[in-house]
Image 1 (spheres, rainbow, N blue to C red):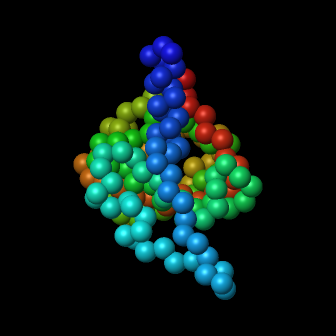
Image 2 (tube, rainbow, N blue to C red):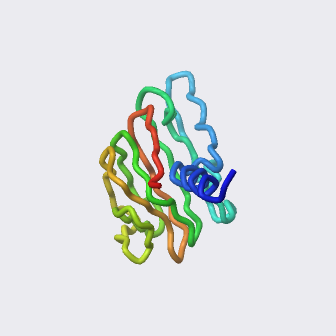
Length: 150
């Protein structure tokens, strides 16, 4: 595998936030689901890898999915797009989002905790953390396909 191919594969994995995908909690007999923050594994002990916790559904299957992604300080996806709209809320920290094809964290918009962004289907973007870890919640309809910018 050449360096360019390896870089695109790595970028796609980072874009998906799928370096580690943890399953959602089970429903009780009435259909309620409670997931405590400490059960997501998205705290400071998560280390220096981008980590994903699936709260509901599955982005590779039909229907609504909700997931949380933790970007450690200095980690970001590379330019990519999705074939479905995605809706992002910043849960912790400040998230930085770029909307151009060239990766440049200095050309991003800072979105602090409580902020929201929509990624329209087909629109190129990249995002991540600068000086502190950030946790975002992403909602969308599956299946969703992610395409890295070449």
